[in-house]
Length: 397
Image (cartoon, rainbow, N blue to C red; front, side):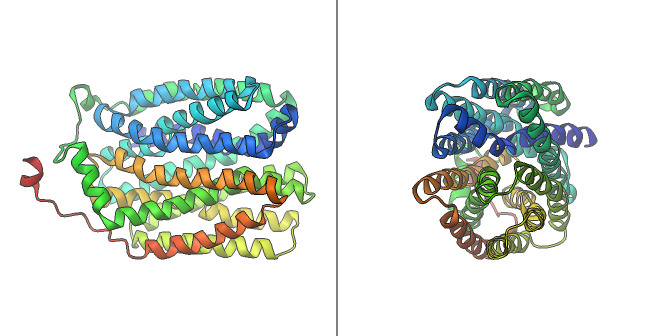
């Protein structure tokens, strides 16, 4: 179990750490290329959509053949996408590299695939905790990588910084060796009661699965809008670029604690209540942030609070899916739930750029994020966490 956690957490640290800093490139790239913010935002929106859609198929392959091959392919795509992002000369090429390629890369190197390995190799008594550890690693990656990316941009320039990150992403290849599952050599190590189609039909007919997807849509909308657009929002308000870098780093630092605590609490409390608390608290925090005077201090306080809530939805959401449906098709089902998250991410980052260009302000998108947080809190409360009862004989037939 230790090897799985160490290697899985390290991969998530790199993959999530790199992506959380993309907001730092918004102004350097748009100014250098003379593009609108919507152009940059649309490419990152495509990235999130590509990530979500590719994640479904990455999950299917990982469930059937193991995560090892999927992670290696994802790491190679990560390097190609970052280098392509550095040298894209048109909005179309930028959307292909920063959008499609990096989205596919993240699908193969983040939660759906890594959590599948954890679910198969960690007992149910420790599963939520282990998922919290992996999510905390992704948060530590943000804390570690965002200031590093800011330093690389300022010292090397935005293009060279992307190339350096592309080379660094290849470190995920040797780490993938630690997640090899020998039982997958001849097929799945998990006994399957269902085909893929049966598993999908069961999940999408189950109301709690639908509610979890709806809540995760909101999570994606909120965190990607804030992660990509808050640096520019703060600069527009007259704060220095360093404030934005420190703000994102604080989100990552406090998210280490938030995701770990959420994973631990998921072993003791009802996960639906944890999720409802996270979403409603996000809405309260955003409301106070917008009302209070904007200073570096208020930004750091807001970032710390949002950090505690940032990816803390990930362990309870995924552990609930595994608890209801089992682990045989967990990566695939987790991929579908995450696809909903990424549709929300697409809407959050794209609407942020679109409405800013049209109104000159991010205010409307902030208000939408508040309303959606209340909605997500309400839809998570009716979720039923108990394992689903199957008629095994009928399913096998």
